[in-house]
Structure formats: C-alpha cells, structure tokens
Image (cartoon, rainbow, N blue to C red):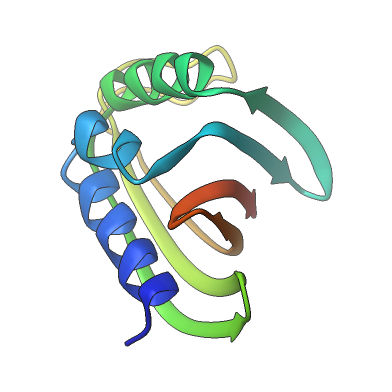
Length: 125
C-alpha cells in the first residue's frame, strides 16, 4: 500500500467507527467535501471547522454505518474508490425515512492528497 491508500483506509476505518477526531486528523486544514446524489450536488463545505460540524451531525443520524471499499484506482495525488455503503438510521429524516430503516447504496469517492493529508473528498451515489 502507498501513503494515499493507507490514508484512505484509515479515514474509512474512522468513519465506520464514528470517530470524528480520527477522521479529522487525516484531513488538510483546507479540506473540501462535496456529496453528489443522483448526479446533483447536495452538500458542499470547505474548511476543517465546517467538515467537523458536518461529521458530528452525520454521526448522530445513524446507529450503524459501514463503507466498504471494493476497488481503488490511484493517480499520483488522487484516488478513486468504489464503495458499498450501508447505514441504519437512528432518527427519522425529513425525507420520510424512519429510525431503524437501513439504507444501502453503491457509489464512488474521489480523494485528493496535499502535504500528506486529504484535501478533497467527493462522494457520488
């Protein structure tokens, strides 16, 4: 494994463990995060403080969550991974999903590294 793959695996491990501190220690101070659902950008944040706030809000929505990396493609300072995602809701959502329901998605994530940390995360589902 190279540094980029190790960084991504550690990030996913922290994400699955609801370890916000573990996630953020792997991120560049100028982190950019974007989430695309059905081809539409629905979340975009910049900066460590905003990322931490989003991660903390997201953590309480689920009682269980797991990203499983199926494949990784590395390109210099960037990587793309294919993921399976499963999460069990801990709370009701405004879109009608109820606590206890399980969400299953397949998608991909794009990561970019700068100065040994993740500076970009884009999730596509």
